[in-house]
Length: 618
Image (cartoon, rainbow, N blue to C red; front, side, top):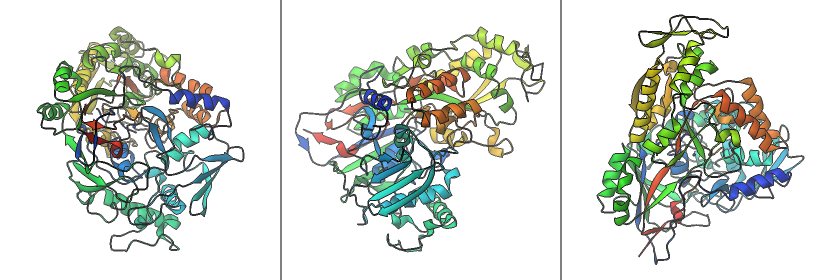
């Protein structure tokens, strides 16, 4: 899922030894930059208290319905808001390890049979806050809504989930059975398909607030027909658009997670209280958990450094690292939070003017040559970052990235960028590279690129983060030297991700050219980095509408291959060279500042918040 600017056991994968080795290595992951540790304490535990968590700058939760569209598919909505109230079927992240968390999952480890074409899931005993049990019918409800509304879902990849499920059934209240259209890697299917499911309460199976909440055992509920499921989805997504009712709605108050929403502002301040009916293994110790919105990293840090315990769990902007000792003297521990993700910005391949140019590999190479990743990391990010050369992350340490993903085929070079342009039909006119040789020959500008097209591009980036502002200014300066004018604008994170939506060239909304939400992608709930959600043709999170038959074939192979690492290597090696997006340094998710009085904190590599584990000490 989209990040803010600062997303199996052996029994599952016993079908292949390679998969078992993969997960063993994943389970031993560690950071590749600064160390990350648990902020546990040996001091006396105190029951109650209010913990204040600082949201990312301009990245406020604004969508509560778990069946989330691409415009709202972000960490601040899914991992750090929805999941506190509505638990996914399978939970990922054990401490700071990138692996399946069987303890916090709503279901037992899935069982694969029939040559990995049948998946059987057994639910644990959980309750909804309205007193009803979490049953297999709640999973069927999710599947019915998903099947009928799949193109509205950010995680949809044509041919993948739910298209690859031939049938699904609930033989009893605790069992769900999926029949698949062919054999799939149990690792991939569990990490990237079953991980997408969030059981939904039957109290939501209606099309109006005027209707009473239906009985879970009622027959002929709306979701059981396609038209009914579409009407339910329309109702629920409409309710999700009314932020002012989140804390008072009879819909959203029915939860199975450890927290309930007590109050919520349209600015993004969320106050949670414990769900006293939570059935999970860890019950909240805090009396309240509060998420606080900030318009910028500097405004957050100003509140934190003022003391008064206004923020319990915040972050240190990289531009203020010189004050590390001071905040430690205030009683904070400095702990970098490393997530399993990579950073990039998107070009709009369907933009009516520049889309044909973005489709030219030479032009994407020229744009990439203008990103000085080593300098940005050392200067703007103060070393709290790793480079991104492919969609497969370099940090935390993992078994996924191969040698090609760890090396840069397009190092910083203004001259290389200029040479690529001039060798493909561009000429400098009044300081701006302009297409003088249209056509599709090897030395032409490329198919669809019109004569006289000047490189005068718009790039919008997420505001509120000084390092991002510095990076974009440096990029525009380098581009200017190569004859490319980059017109920079900034907007909030939520605005940028809304603008960076897949579109067709005929749509009025398709005029955007490049969007940088300053956070890239975090692999959750697609926890295995095979890229289908991001780069499969027509995928819901393929924001720039990149399309490649070769990429589609390589992605598909990662789902079914008997040698998953070889298939993943082939995919990432292609994406290193093809540049479906512009890669930029991947910063630590945040340089977290955690009160020394707060215990039980671990920093999940999938960026899930688990404040039910937190407690104050004395």
